[in-house]
Amino acid sequence: MATNRLAQEVMDHALAHYNEGGWDVICEAWDLEQIKAACVRYDRHTGRKIYLRALSGVLWDSILLDCVSTYADRQADAINSAF
Image (cartoon, rainbow, N blue to C red):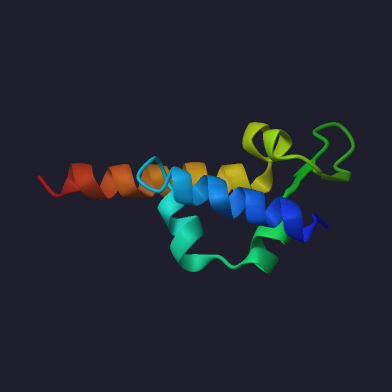
C-alpha cells in the first residue's frame, strides 16, 4: 500500500486541480486511506498488483487515475445532458 506521504501528495494535487476533470470528487469524497489503497496499478500481462511509490506513477497509470477519468466523464455527461 502507498505511504501516508504519497496519499497526501495525491490529495494536494487533487486540491490544486480541483476544477479539472474529476479531481474535485477525490477532494470531497475520498480520505487518505482510500487514496492509499488506489495508488496501485495492475500489470496488464500478469494481473499482478504493483504498488506505486511516486506521484508521477499515480498520475501516469493507477486505479485512482482511472477513477478520476470516470468522474470527469460523468460530469461532462451531466453538463451535456442539461441542455
